[in-house]
Image (cartoon, rainbow, N blue to C red; front, side):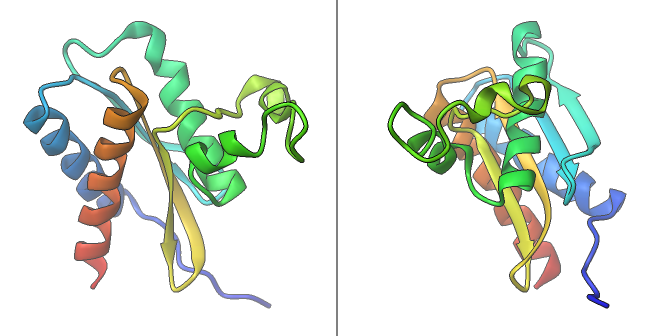
Length: 141
């Protein structure tokens, strides 16, 4: 049997606060999703001016980061024509996202969840997601 750490609601709240603070700092209202290690939604927040069209995108980014256990930016690099994951974005009812802004969460090399952010540029989305990762790592250390 393998014992793994689990992301709890209190952890998700800390991650979310880190993301929101960074989004406010860079002045971009975001849609922010946090999933567990299986890619199931734990928490979602749409800031006042977060794009309605980015709701599903942020959830997809979080799902992908948790399920693929890598950033959506890295996953996007291997999912273009001629690469090993080409077409993956059409699997799982189209839930996979291959645009930057999704980051996995690890504890002792075990996946515990994912963060997905959308509404800014891909780089802004990734910066906000990284702030959530950083808040989480500070919390558990």
